[in-house]
Length: 407
Image (cartoon, helix red, strand yellow):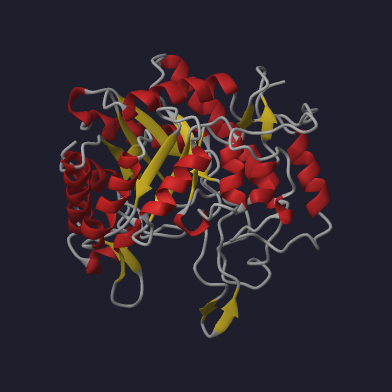
């Protein structure tokens, strides 16, 4: 049976325990978890979950271990990470040519990055179909609607019926993710050096993610939905479902950190997500904005360094630099992103750590969603503003950012 087909899957052993000490296969409804859907009332919910639980995982334990080895090299400074792709993947655009285009963008960015070190290529692809939202509703033309939460959950169409969460979308997401993973595997086979391209997405919708926490052929639990899951800034609570899920898995994991993160927060995250202190197991993705990063990042570095936890430190210079252009459209300025990356690299190195790489939202097309480079001003945003959610860099803008990043 190939990846993407639905068939019998091995049941979790009774009493299985993951790396974080949490029992495997726990119903997430029994623990707190933010950003989840109240869709259990839908008659399709139970059969969809059963189908996902019977579906083949999209990644293997061997792949996860190979990626972990490369992340360990990044952790030691012998490599650098570039992680990039759509803010929110689209069901409508998902295809082999689209996957090839994302890989081409990763290769383009890697060519100008790392100062001669190997570049680990990871795409926001093969499952980045769900997005957290800061509000429980939005008003469109005077009508309150549920927010768009990504194609795994609902539609971007501004209509009450389209915005209704639909569990059946998880099956569509799985099929499209399986196709993307097959294509990524073909790219890796053509360049068998282990440096990618690999998949990643935010482990957000626990109905979907928990269905793929399975033992691999060695008996180790692996989150089979992606190679490299991350937990977002909004869902990194230690006792909540997302952290419990990724803590149980053998995959390398990442956690995003905003300016409100404390030294105590990051030390506890290290203890829970990487109790064995394995280099490459844990990545912190810093998303703080300018000027907050100058005061917020140093105490986190000092706290982690004081307890000798190995961490890959990565910069996400986009999320905390989002602003509203005239008319309310969201955008980001390349100058602010370059400034945040500059502060990130200086601060990390001043604290005796390695600047491990960049995590970017980048389109596969030359869109006009951020200002800078070929997009001269906010008036130019209208030419090709196509994102489903947050503004993405174009490939040309991302290449300029990488070239100016100082890694």
